[in-house]
Every structure is written in structure tokens, then in C-alpha cells.
Amino acid sequence: MIRELNIVVSPAQAHDNALLKKIVSENLNIELSRINQLVVIRRSIDARNSNIKFNLCVNVFIDEPMPLGFKSQFSYPDVSKSSRVIIVGAGPAGLFAALHLIELGFKPVIFERGKMVSDRKRDIAAIHGEHIINPDSNYGFGEGGAGTFSDGKLYTRSKKKGDVRKILEVLNFHGAQDEILIDAHPHIGTNVLPRVIVAIRHTILNAGGEIHFNSPVSNLVIRDREARGIVLRNGTSADGIAVILATGHSSRDIYRMLHENGVLLESKPFAVGVRVEHPQELIDRIQYHGASRGVFLPAAAYSFVEQVHGRGIYSFCMCPGGMIVPAATSPGELVLNGMSPSDRGGRFANSGIVMEIRPEDIPAGKKGDLIFAGLRFQEQLEQQCFQMAGNTQFAPTQRLTDFVNGRRSSGLPQSSYLPGLVESPLHEWLPRFIGSGLQEGFKLIGHKSRGYLTSEAIVMGVESRTSSPVRIPRDNQTLEHIQIKRLFPCGEGSGYSGGIMSSAVDGERVAESLANLYK
Image (tube, rainbow, N blue to C red; front, side, top):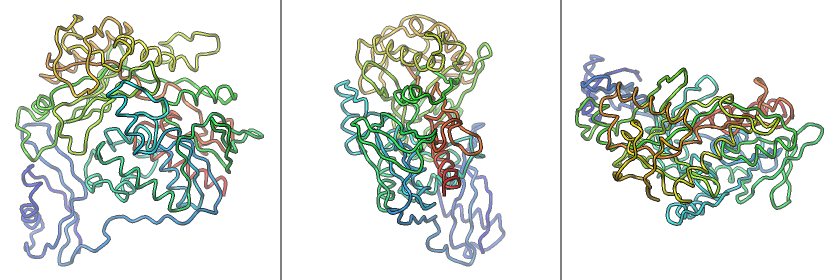
């Protein structure tokens, strides 16, 4: 017999299987010897007060052993001779679209502008050490997309749009740790994600799919208002029964190519701001109410949402025990992002603190060019940040309290950011409405979270790639582009998802819709 039981325990009890068995036996009023195995199936932390608890949901195996093969298994058939579907981009959306197409009997043919994981690491090292940006291979472009060398957070609010549980199980099947199937806010870690991505590549290739690296797409093949293939930058082409466009929110050249082809695009809201970094120990004290984290509690995270003059100011991509990295995708730009290893064991905690930007906030510029106003705004801000850093990948930095109070910093604390820091008055050169909004937002956060507003923390510029300022509009039912048949915009680049999980879910949904339409 298998019983499901919800229990509330202390952090120490949650990490001691013998104690858990005793608690479960008392709750169920059965002899301890009858419990052969406990399997935690959901876990969350309640840190609303100093008496911190773990909420656990466990499967209790009573008078029977846990069966072998208890974890999910997936079978991917040979599709080498099946109908070809072109996928542009090998990020989470493209890879999960490919996996689901294989399940549905189609052959995915992926074209990725960047390199495979092993080669991509050398280009990322060059950003840190030599401040050199390869526009096709960096933190944003390459096998696995921006997700490969990211924090690996697997939390999404878009549960109504697809099977989130399946995405977690597929990642676990390909080597992600078992904990992602349990935790309320699962996390893989930047040290584990690359080998998971490589395992997914092997699954696609072993099933007869294709993946072409170093293959930037320069154009679509459109016949009779249908997308039937792509043209690469080197002039070669490839065709299929449909095209899934999963290029990510940083593929600005793809947006411009689509526009030149008369493909309908539209502007959308996005957000920009700064990265803020605190000592992790300080965040632990705040979030755990002054209690020591000890060995049983994870590095503490936080989430803030405030309103300043009717506009959202919020934390984005919070990384406990992590590091800040240079995430530009073109020379002459400076963009920051954050990530954490699987153990979240670093000395610092970082997060984007960003402000909502609406299309009407930005001048349209040239007549009829309103669609790209937000994209240009991003580019100009990133270029300005690069110039403020002396045309390097050093991060313009200011102590948090100095930024909030509008004064220049004298001396900076240590940071996780490896290229290095340069003192800079962000409050002076950020666009005025953004700088003042962030200052007020930090004051509100500091009022609610005592100790957060401190000179031990620093703000660094800029965090500008929260989402795309451009959307590729698609039909709500078919998920095809509303104008071009057989073209399926997908993932963050489409403007319909954000983050690893929602992008992966979107990839599966698009694959399903494509299969239903073009069997």
C-alpha cells in the first residue's frame, strides 16, 4: 500500500530519514517496521517567521517495497525518414519542441547560430579574460541558448499553458538532479545544465534528428504566404513542412530580417534596470529573521514587487549564492545577468531590480519605426553602459546607498563579477525616469526588508534583457504566425514566454499544434 501524507517538520527533521519515518509512523498510527520506504514528492520552506519549517508531501510505502523504475522514462522513436520540421535556435524552446516532435513522429532539423557547449565555453572565457564578444557564441547564443549558462531556475507561473511536470521529468531523465521533481522552486545550477543540454542533444541525434551548429539563419523561404524553409548566412538553404522560430529575445537581426520580409511584428512592454549584489550572509539574516542558516537551510532568496508612480519595480532572476556575468551578444555593448551553481554556495546573492517600460515611454524615431523603438532603446542603453565602463566589460558600479541618495561612491566592496568593476554614478547617466524610479523602488524594498538597503551592497549596470521589446504575433489557437502559415514563433523570442520553463512549455505546445495541423 502507498499512502500520500503531508507533514510539517523542522529543517533538521527534514534531512533525517530515520526521524521522518518515526514522524510518519506516528501520524499514520502504524508500526515503524511496516514502513519500507519514504519518497518526498513535494518540498517547500515556510520562513514567514523565525520558527522555520519544511512542508513535505511524502509517499509512504507500507508493507511493500518501492518498485524499480519509479522515475519517469521516455522513449524517442527513430524519425530519420519522417517529415522534416525546421527549428531555428537550440535554446529551451527549440530543444523541447524537437523532443516533442520526435515523440509525435516528425524529424526535427535544428539550425543554431552558435557553437556546441564545449566550444562555447572558450568564447565565454574570452569575455571574462579579454573582454572579447563573439556575436554568435556567448552567454546568449549557442547550444542550449541563454539557459545553458544561466542560473537554471525552473519556476514558472504559466502552469495553465502546458505540462510543467513533464518538462521537469524530461530534464531529470537527461541528468538533472532528482530534487527538481520535489522542490517548490526547483533549480538545476549552471554547473549541471551544460551536461543536461548535451544529453538532450544526444537524444535528438540518436532518434534521427539533426542539429547544425555555427549555422546562423539570414532569411526565411516563404512561398504563397507559407514558411517552407530557411536560408543560412553562407547562402545554403534547407526546407521542411514548417518552420519553428525559437531564436531567443536577443536575436535582434532576426526581428529585422522578418520586418524586411514584410512579416508582421508588434512592440510590447519590457523592463530594464540594474543588478544588485549583497553578501549572501546578509540576505540569509534578513530572510531567516536573524537565525543562522546552519547546514539544513539553503541560501536564502527573495522576491520583491513594488509600485512607483503606477509603474512596476520588481526583482528579476534572483540568484542566491551566485555570481554576476557579462551577457552582451555584440561588441560595443555591456549587459549583466546572474547565475548560481547547483549548491548555491557562493559568497554573494544577486538579482535584477528592474522597472516596467511601456512602448509609449520611448520616442518612435523614424516615421513608421515604432516597432523597433524599444529594441533601439535597449541597444542605446547597453552601448552607453559600455562607454561608461571605458569601452570594456568592466561593470559600472555604485554602492546601493549612494545610488539611492544620489551621491558618488568612494571605494567599492568585493564582488562576484570576474571582469572587474569601475566606479560610476549610475544615478546620473541612467535615463532620468528609470534612475529615479529605481531609487524610490529601493527605498520601498528597504522599508519592508530591514537591512537590505546597505552600503555593503552594490548596484551595477545594466540589466536590460529581461524580455524582448518585440512580439511576433501568432494565432491563439493554432500558434502559427497570424499572417504567415507554417511559421511558428516560439519561446522568449516570440514574446510569449520568459525563462527556461515557460519557453520549454511553449516549445512543446507549438510542436503539438504543428503536428495537429500538418500530419
